Length: 301
Figure: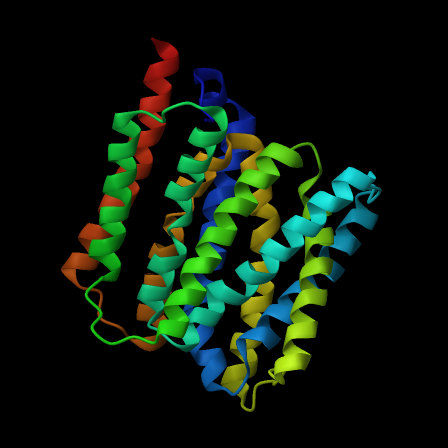
């Protein structure tokens, strides 16, 4: 399990990783909140996911050329990119796509099974218990999500639940795979190649299912464009964070994503921000801070 030492806590590498994780969370949170507006405009989740992947290919390709970052990979690394691309295709589809069938808050909560899954997967791989105090901190974080987002939905579409849950699983595996297999590859290169693979997979599915439709009104087009822009810019920050502060810390900081989703939902859809959601947001932040303090004290002593 990744731990944050005293030097890393005060070092520029860790600060950069934390900033990347927070910005990534805000961008992805805003994108999720825009899902209903986009789908109400007539487009489909697969269309959004396809153009998100295509934009990422173009965006990352241009950045790699401008920054003179080599796109050359070894054959074993190409195989890793195939795996990451397959996982990313469902992340791109499921995170936003689930909001077509279920409320934003439920979709966000289902996707956010991935941080504890990252901790558990790494514990199994490293054969090391994460520690009871850290598990308690994670419990506080997700209890806060439950309070903030609300978990008492009596009516929901099972398709949205399945899509949201499996997208969270795919995200957890993607994080661990990046940290274990491609940690030394530049994040722009990772996003470039996994987006190519994801675009191919999504295009085949969209054509087969005849689900490649575009917005029919201005609001739909605005949502469509903003989702693609926000997600394409956030994903590189996500991998930068993993490489600088580790997968568990990245996952925990990304618990800010549903907070951003709720705030955006209030602003865009005029949802009421209740006292329960404010308390939940505080619990999320408390859990994240607890993990950082635990790691700090563990190294210091």
